[in-house]
Image (cartoon, rainbow, N blue to C red):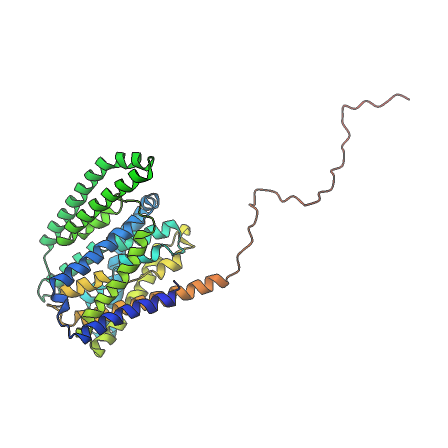
Length: 387
């Protein structure tokens, strides 16, 4: 699927959700517990799908860059986005909106992973960045709302700490279960087809069970950690489900946007989306200064995507900051349209670029195709014949 086709499909999904909400007069969809569980499940699946596709060796090799990206990188992106928003609107409250769109959507990254032209190192960096920057943005949202703005708390730092401990506990239980199954899985992979399928089915059921508990109690970080080790071999099924999940996610955004839409707030959201996309480019270029990233710098700079994490944070902010959904939802659309257009343009430019001829290494001397025979040298040990 080309970038324009993908953009058209995603905008169609958004429009379909909008039309359904408008046709049936759906209001306050975001307050429904079914809707909350649905989008949280999609977000959790995106986190799992994103980390389950990481090449572990590359993840370990790039761990330092990943940690910087999900900590200092997120803070830097928030600062850049807020600077643009404050310059444009002079509204301090837009700081929390900057936090809401500062992360990268893991479901979108997982859906694009299969067709990405990035190296394994860059895929590992972007997938880990998308999966593990969510806790940082949630913490920033909680802190800024509770203390800096004084407009009422979305949660509390204490509840965030408890949630983090519960996430780690659930991931620890899952890891112990995996250590018990790992030996049997390795033996089953060497056995017959029926045994392999049976073991994979058991692993899928285990992942679904852990995933249900994680979604039910909003322990989504545990799902991101789960994808690093609990990986049933499903081939291309995960990538296909990620594509379908992204379409459903945009339709879910359309259901909410139909009731909250405002042209004025949509304009604010458009500026927010452009600022988020530009902030990713600046931070990514700063993180990828070393020469090993030279071939992937542009693609990582154009890697900003937004989706369900931004929507969930906007839903949390809506009671305290009315209009958050009406601003963040258009920003999500703008970011994803910019992502598709910019990456499509870069692919076309890269396709027209001439491929350099491979040059022999400098330490290997070049040998001519038809070398002239070397002149014979007289041996110092040859004895001249006597006359």
